[in-house]
Amino acid sequence: MTISTVLGALIANTLGEKFGHGMFGEETRLAGRAAQKLGIELGVIKDVYLAVHLKYLVPLSVAFIVLLFILERFVKDRKTRVGVLIGLAFLGTLLIFRRFEALKDLSTGFGIFKEVPIQETRPSSFSDLWNSFSISFFLAPLFFLRFVPKRAKLPDFLFLGLIFPSLYMIKTWTRFLFIGSIAVALMAGLGVIELYDALRPRLDGRKVFALGIGLLVLLPTVNAGFSLKETYSLRPYMNEHWENALTWLRENSNQNDIVLAWWDYGHWVTYYGRRSPVAQGSANPSVALYYLGKLDENWAMSLGVDYVVVSYYDFIKFGAIVETAKMHSKYNITENYGLIVLPLTSKLGALVFQRGDYRIIAKPGEIWNVIVDLNGQVIAPKELYVEYQGKVIKPELSASNTNTYLYINLNYGYAIFMNEEAFNTTLAKLFIKPEEPYELVYSDGGLIKILKLKHPNVRVENTNGKVIFHFENATGTGLGIWGFLDNGTKVFEKWYDVKGMEEFELPKEVNGTVIRYAYAVGKKIVDRGIFRQG
Image 1: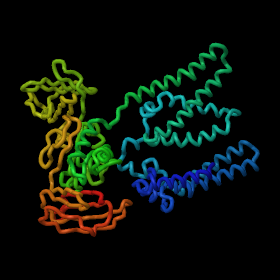
Image 2: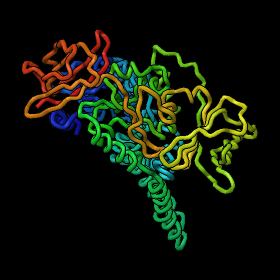
Image 3: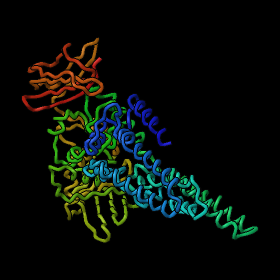
Image 4: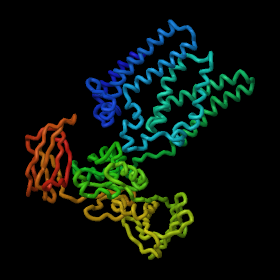
């Protein structure tokens, strides 16, 4: 069985070259960090885990199995066997960690997710376990009833080979809850049967029947009920509002335009918008700093950003944005940001927004009367912004006694209450009252807004086999072009003088299927982009 995994690893490596490897494939950032930490060079085997498996885990496992055969042949005393077995297992573990000290950082992605943690790479909480497994999690320990002396069987020990790694994975990352579900289901199912078999000889007649109904019917039914309830309550983050916004972006922007959005939505920008996002797949501290106003439009311009996406959902995740920004080593975030999103709970006599101990009561009129109840402390905001039917207005307030700000959206029924630090962030400004050099080009009235960043822009047009660069606001002096193959190999690099030009044809000397370009005024980059040639 152990040696057969060699064939499985080779098959996985072959398929990976065609369909892409997993988290530790050579093309991923995590693979580079892991290979460096573990001192492994990838060659024919292009996945770090597969390389470790073939080079170390299989030989160690085979050696351990051979030792077990020797132990069985020459050591007859059971206690001695158990002692030697435990000693060998401990020695093997020490050897692995001595050879790969970096395995201690495995749970943090070899340090990557310490620097930029995301929800999927945090340890599982009790809430995560309950939402994933409900009562199965509490039934799982019953599995160990199978190891009562004289009842344990060989398959039980094989199950442990699945169970122990799965439990470790569940503890380490919430991302692995779905993998661990196999082990939890196995433990809970066999454990309930084991409990039934253990109690049945002590009962008779109707009691045995009641025990069977309770353990083998009611428990699984209750477990299924909790699971169905949790599943039914879930809603995808991707919805028709995002699809409409990103479809509009695809139909109303250039193929080479670059989009800045929170990293959670990067893959959506790629799939629905067919545009290149600044961040996708992992948290980006620079984007977080931009949303907080620590990096300005010049930074975005240097990356070639043409469109910025801001959304209601960004305010829901505002705490994550702040925490991600704090991960940047060059910036010390000292501001005490305060922001809360409250749903509309009542319209009777006044607009009431409430979440927990926060309650906002707003009475519309020529002059709005707004009070904010913070767990008994009543205050009035400095400014109010109201969005309704395509307009954002700033009503006059009857009173104001704090440097706090309130945004009310009547289209979707929610309010955002902010302190001065949060209100002055780029995220809040773009969502509530965008100013130059930004232009609001798309809005669904309060969930998703797209803004165009005005700057010297390059539009790429591919007609009749010719690639033409069109320079809008043609103030640039130089155009840098880099050509790459699909595997990332750079095959061309050159700067061209384009001062005074409004358009420029891609020279035939440019090699590569993926073309990157940079439009510059002197040494300052004012636009970037990427497109495929041919």
